Every structure is written in C-alpha cells, then in structure tokens.
View 1 (tube, rainbow, N blue to C red):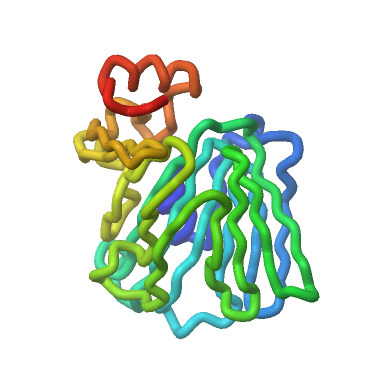
View 2: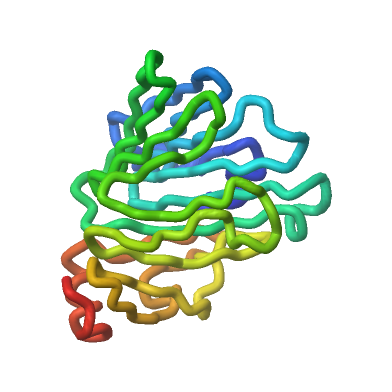
Length: 227
C-alpha cells in the first residue's frame, strides 16, 4: 500500500484493484466543509479532508481495510519531502476488512466505522476529529512541523500500534524504524517495522500478520502486553 504517495497524488489508488472488499465503493462526497472519499484498490481506503483548506496547509485523515489510521499533514507549497508528514496507528483486534461511513446532517457529524469496530467521529463544519469510540486522545488543531501530526492517543480499551510521525514519507516505510505496541493498561513494547510489515521491490508496504499471527508474535516478543 503506497498510502503516503497516494495522498500526495490526490489519493490515487494501487493498480491491484482485485483485492478490495466488495463493499468498497468508488465514491466522493462533500459534506458541509468536509470532503470524504472512498477508494477501492489493493486495500479499501477512506479519506476525510477539509473542503476549503488554508492553501497547502491542512490535515487529512485516512483509514484502510487493514486497520490503518493515518493523519496526513500538508505543511506548505514546498517539496513533498519537506512539506508533508504523517502519523500512523493500527487498532486491534480487526473484526472485519471493511471501512464504511455514515452522516448525520442534523448534528453535522460524520462517523467512520473501521475494521477494529472503532468509530471515528468528525465535525463536518470544521473538518476536525472530535471522538474515537472507547479511546481517549488529545488533538492539536494547528498544523505544524512540531506536533507529530497533532493526534496523541492517551488511553485505549485494547491493543494498538503507534508507528509514530515521519516527515516526507509514511513512517511505516523504514523497516528499521522502532515502533510501539500498547495494551489497554498502557503497557508498552517496542519492535521494528520489519517485524510486522512486508516490503515489496516496487515500494508497497503491507501489514503481514493476521490477528492470530500477531498475537503469537507478541506473546513471544512482548510478554508484558495483556493480549
């Protein structure tokens, strides 16, 4: 999944369309001041973006059918390797491989249902994330180079993976990068990207474990985690 490049290139999709879940539709909607797009591809992707961004400084959100939650920051008109950045998380367990959404026009709220069962709710008038079910987080609404994407999860009711923030590329693209799993008690275990992602010669990065395989790996590697 070349997700970071896909966002930069107007959310273009992988050519491997046959693997997308059948429920994933190619769809684009403008809801108040928010744009939402569903993109079938190798993995189904749903993006949430401001309809009228402040020039090239804005924040978008991406969800995919493997469980990825990405915060993408555009920081200006400069080169992509200088004026973009991304923060990535995965939530577990993954109950399905679908990403869907619904809209409540009276409340001006967009709800994105993700593979983990978690629901991410956005205020569509401001194009901002306001809640994640069973998750506590902080949100810095300023789009800057210093706030690591702007979203910090402080408590979650289950296992999640924090891949961190990287300027100029997806943080999952470096197989040697150190990343952190946390459980519901906030116990932490550090591994590297190469432990959980597979890398192809043409630059694709894919999560390589089923949930059962991941539990087996973490039981050996991270015995302190409550799985």
